[in-house]
Each structure stands twice: as structure tokens, then as C-alpha cells.
Length: 116
Image (cartoon, rainbow, N blue to C red; front, side):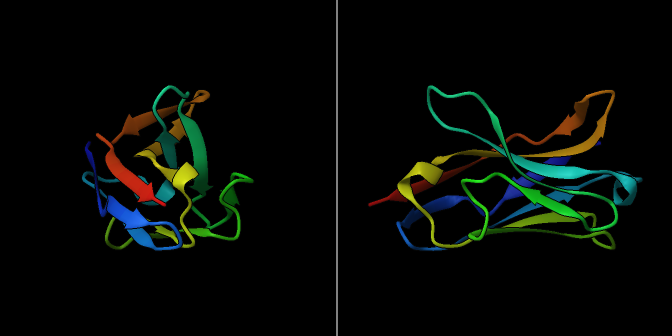
């Protein structure tokens, strides 16, 4: 089982990026999936999650600007990020299958840098 993120990069404040997370293997359509981020010197935080039925949750800091979605047919998770702020600068990680109070699978991360 592997998760591979893509779509990170550098953008100016106010810009947009769309992250993708391609999942290999079976069973992800039944799994909760999420995006986390870790900024330098800070702990990793949950940005957004999506349940198998499409229910979504967002951190207060990104609600209204970020949109999580999934395409189960393609085993792919997305994060559309609009109105980016410098505080959004971080490494963004995809995670899948929350069981026993922890995420079972993690991607390697993709860097997002927002400049003023």
C-alpha cells in the first residue's frame, strides 16, 4: 500500500494550488482519508478529512478556502487550496484509513510554499 502526493510548489499569497494523492492497493474507497501539514518548528496538524460517504471536516484555519474531495474510482484524494496565505507554508501529507485511533498509511509529503 502506497500513497503518493503531487501538486505542491511555490505560489504567491492569494494564489491557488491543487494537491493530489494517488493510492495504490485496494480498499481505500471504504477508508477515511485526510490531509495533514507540518510547518517548520510546529507539530503536524490535521487540515481536512473525508469519510467514505463524502462527509468532510476542516480545520478552522482553512475552512472556506480549502476543499477536500476524493475519486474512489481513481483511488485519488485531492485538496484544492485557494486564497493561500503565508501561514499555509508547510509540508502536506496524505493519510489513509484511520483505525485504532491512528492513521494506517502516510505519503511522503509535498512542499507548499506561499510567499508574500
